[in-house]
Image: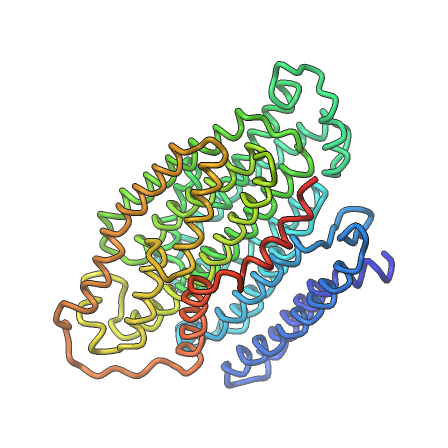
Length: 496
C-alpha cells in the first residue's frame, strides 16, 4: 500500500482511529457525555480530509483518484456520500446523549460501533471491486446488528436476532451473485466486468447469458435488503420497533443512502448497458414498495413501526429515480435523473433525522412510542412537536420542504423516461401517506394531553440537532440550490 492509498483512505482511517480512541477512553472516563462530545468533535477530522480530497479530485483531469490496487475510486460521487454519512453520524451522536443513558455500561461501545458502521458506509460508496464491496457491506451491517440488541429487552433481542439472520441470508444471496458474475467475467473489478459486458455471448438474453442474469438478480436481491425495498422488507417493522431509536435513525438514513450508492455504482460501472427490461423491473418494484409501505403504515399504532413502513415507501420513491436512471434518458435527462435521486436521498436524510430526533425527545417524556400517547405534545413540548411536524410535512411532500422538491425532481425524471404511469402512482401514494402522517400531527396539536405532569426538558444537544435538521429540511425546500450543486457534481462521475 502506497502513501497515496493511505491518503485516499484517510477519512476511513481517521474514523477507525476515533472509534478505537473513544472505546479506550470509555475505560477511564466516568462522565460518558465526554465520549459523545469527543466523537462529535473528532468527526471534524474525517470531514476535513474529505474536503481536501474533494479539492484534489476537482483538480484531476479525469475527476477521480484510484488507489488500493484499483479497488477504491475517490470521486465526487463517493465524497458526496461521505459527507452525507459523516453529517448524519455527527447529528445522531449529538442527539443520542439522553437516550444512551439507558444503555448503562454500553455507551462507549455505542459510540464506537456507530463510527465503525459509518466507516463501512463511506467505504461502500467508493469501492469498485466486488470483494471490497462485500467487506464494506459487512462492516456497515455488523455493528448495527449488535446495537439493535443493546437495550437488553426481549423485543430488542428479537430485533437483533432477526436482523442478524435476515442480513446473513441477504449477504449469502449477494455473495453467490457476485460469484456467478466473477465466474462469467473472470474479474471482480467493476470496470473489467463492464468491459466484458460490452461483448455479450447472447444478445437476446439480458446481460448476455443466463448465468450472469441470475448473478445480477441475486445481487439486486442482496442490495434490496439493504435499501428495504419490497419484497426484501420483512425485517423492517420489527427491527425498527425493537432496536434503540438512535440506531434505527442511523439505519434508516445512512444505511439506505450507502445501499443506493453501491447499487448505482455497480450498475453504472459493471453493467453500463442497462436494459429497458431492468428499468421496468425497478419501476414495478418502486410502485409495489410505495403502495405496500403506505397502506400498511395507515394501520400502525406504534410510531417507530409507522416510520418503518414509511421507510419502505420511501425506498419505492427512490427507486422511481433508479428506474428513470436505468432508462438511459437521452439529451442530458440521465444527468437530471441521477441528480434527482441523489437530491431526494439528501433531503430524506435530514427529514428522517429530524423525525427520529423529535421522537427520541418525545419518547423520553411519555415513556413509550404509542401514537395515541403523542396527544397534546404541542402543549407539553412545542419545540419537539414543531420539529416532528416539519419532518412529517416533508415526508408527505408538502411545500416548502426538501422532499416536496425531491418528489418534483423524481416524478419529472420519470415522465421524461416515459414512465408517466409511475409518476402518477407516486403522486397518489403521496396523497395516501398524508392520512397517517397528519394523524400524528393532529394528535399533537388538537388533542388534549394525557398527562399534565412536568417532565425533564430535553438536552441542549438533542434540541440543537433537531433544530439543525429541521432548518435543513426547510432550507433545502426554499432554496434547493443549496443541495443541487453538490448532487449535480456527484452525478457527473458515473455518467459516460
